[in-house]
Length: 240
Image 1: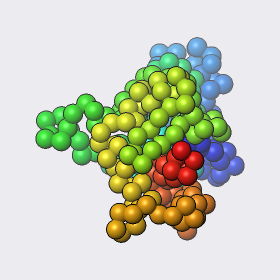
Image 2 (image 1 turned 90 degrees about the horizontal axis):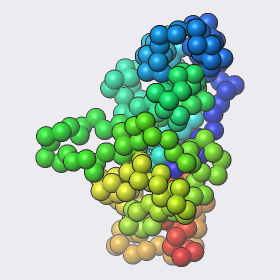
Image 3 (image 1 turned 45 degrees about the vertical axis):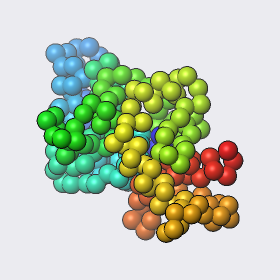
Image 4 (image 1 turned 90 degrees about the vertical axis):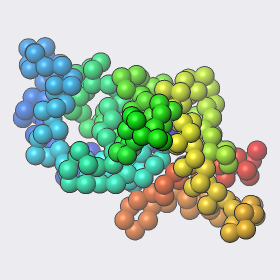
């Protein structure tokens, strides 16, 4: 899990929030039960995502996250059509539990989406589900909106995610972060950064150099896939 800093000053967010308020889909308006009184959280969100400013908001959220999933760190790819983008909009507080937050930028993050895994496929099973798909309507103890959220997690060179307290271990289970499908992708990324072409572990000096830069974004503002898991694995090697 990685902390995501929201940019409320961006023009995309400001335009979105103006349209949200005009349509009375903002938190203050929806706190009045008489406004859109027949609408639940899911209904509100269905209308919100059809607003003209919503696509630009999604692009801003991609920028906020450096094009990686807030929970597992997988690469997120954008598309002008939301139904073919390789991510979903995740509500930190589920929209089914609080309709006033269904359209709030501060309650929305982007999580990876499994486009090519379908029931009946040879590679499909429930253990492949993770992040938003696994979370569904559950609430987490720690979220990517908390500055210190990453401090509760540790990562090893085998691609496993571990929680430093019971609440975090519960969150790992809710998000299914140790799903086999996800762990295999993560360990491949970790091995590519910690070992040389002969499968030898890099020196401590080389690992520290990797650690100093792995969380940096590239010229496009993108993070490396699984960057925080890689950083955690390096720390685990250097300070077991």
